[in-house]
Length: 100
Length: 168
Image (tube, rainbow over all chains, first blue to last red):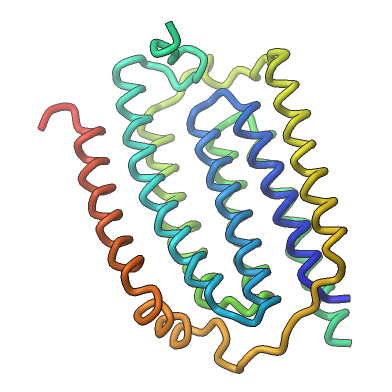
């Protein structure tokens, strides 16, 4: 049986791994990497459904997701550098001045 | 026969993919996490080829495994991590609850996939997923989002410079 279900299940598993990483990891860089993992899981779902439907719209959406991920990585890592410069830490729990 | 071959190649890529994705979460050192993520992107590109998405697989290797991960590694090296940044995270109760919620998401997704029945492949045109076909789609139907993406990338470049630079 070669069908979309395998790929969708794999995407769901990848998304869950990324989600668990985002909530568990405290290093801001690793949290970013887990977000990238979740974006890739979404991409995999788009491509699986594109193959299932026989339409290439999913490929175009995956292309845009990759572009947005590149922009997000650039801005996000710039913020990480700025935070590290002012706070001297990558530990998310210590960057909480908005909380109080 | 072709089905079984496809399934074999699927597992050939899927098992190392999940293993390296777990490696990202488990790794204590961010450099190891980044290398695991690069491996995961490569295996994912293999899965994309299996889904007849050649252009996206190519972009995955070029943009994700190439550009984005190089930026990640640059930043990791630039920030020269200290020992206390690598200490294992102590999970609070709310984080355990969040992990439980994550597995809840997995359960919901798995149930949805199971209940949707077997989603068979449609036969596709020979040029499905090629650069020519996807490019034609991008420059006709998706022309406006494509141009908006270029604007987004420009804004991201300027924003990254402004945020990261000490003094302009």
